[in-house]
Image (cartoon, one colour):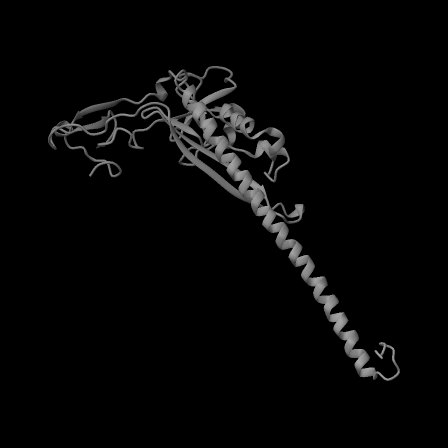
Length: 265
């Protein structure tokens, strides 16, 4: 016949051992279950992060293709429209319900620009996602999607049947010649940005943008044109401040000019 736990034949030590075992199991369960649940939630969260990153990248690719078609009529990237197309491609409801920090307003495309020389659009989309920690910590993970889309066919960069007859490219104020017409030193990156966002944008040297005395008279437009290396904002694409003269000459005619460190051998 099985003895019960409270059987008088059991010693106090035996009873204490059984109670200790049960208590140990309870403590282990109390620790293991939260850890297991946290691991499952973290795994689901990683899937959500990957999902939102994939959605933004595909949406940006589609928006970039649209922008490449638009530059046929306006040779500059409309950053505001690019962002609007990205949000539209993903779906505003999907974005607002996601872990994207700031929702649709958290998507930033201000570093996107187009090279007038090559017709290539350099798309940069920056955003952040909230991490699964208490909200008061405001911890986020930042991401960036970059891609390049060609608006139209580029140019042949090298010609000539000998080294002396090879075609190189120079500017009126440049100190070197370029063997590649699409060299980044020759590119003039023009982008169209909202004037309200201009105060938060810096050029490649970290400087602010100031109005161009040639084409900005009185109030500015809703959007303005800026370049990556310039320090002025413009109201007109035809402004001389947005022009750069590039001449093709034979290498033998480049005189004392040295070769560009980026594109010349």
